[in-house]
Image 1 (cartoon, one colour):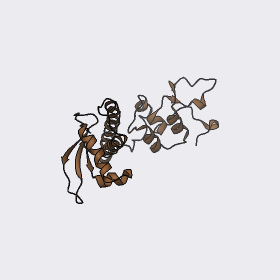
Image 2 (image 1 turned 135 degrees about the vertical axis):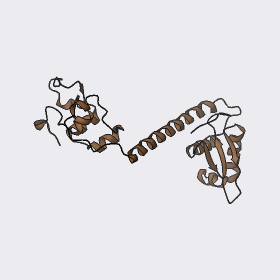
Image 3 (image 1 turned 45 degrees about the vertical axis):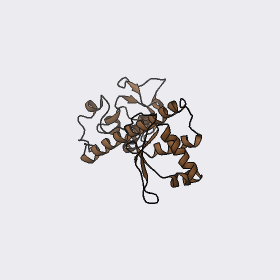
Image 4 (image 1 turned 90 degrees about the vertical axis):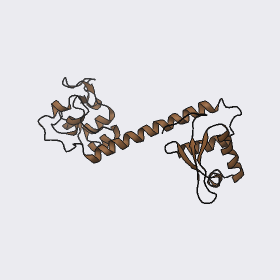
Length: 205
């Protein structure tokens, strides 16, 4: 770990500091609130941890989501350094695409919760608390806006009898918040329902 007694004056070419934030200077190294003139801004906490060696480059990339040289000064600082081993690979590209897809799905899921609670306040008749709980569970389990539904499993999850679970799903159906896509066979397969966050609103997860 780098200590104040042995702090470098500038990033070592090819180092994680040089690759990711060569223009940044850790706040803990400021002298009278000032940084050396070749640096243009204070480092963020993650950058300071990277520069001082408190975290590894891999953990820095994990924390920040960075995959390549993000700093505008990184190329000029490291141009004499050995080629980086972080060149994009097919696997890393697939991981980036998967990460973007997961983030988009998460954004859609959170948006669905928000719009559902905005819509549910205007429903007449209002949903029972049990029906609201069932919708939240179904929405959490959706894939491509569809979820598997069985009254037996719902009753077990919410600790009620099957007639109560069926009544809650009937409320959701009447409100237009779920739509049966394929009816299951009792004891053999689940019913597939499309879950909507407001009545008659199409969802694309």
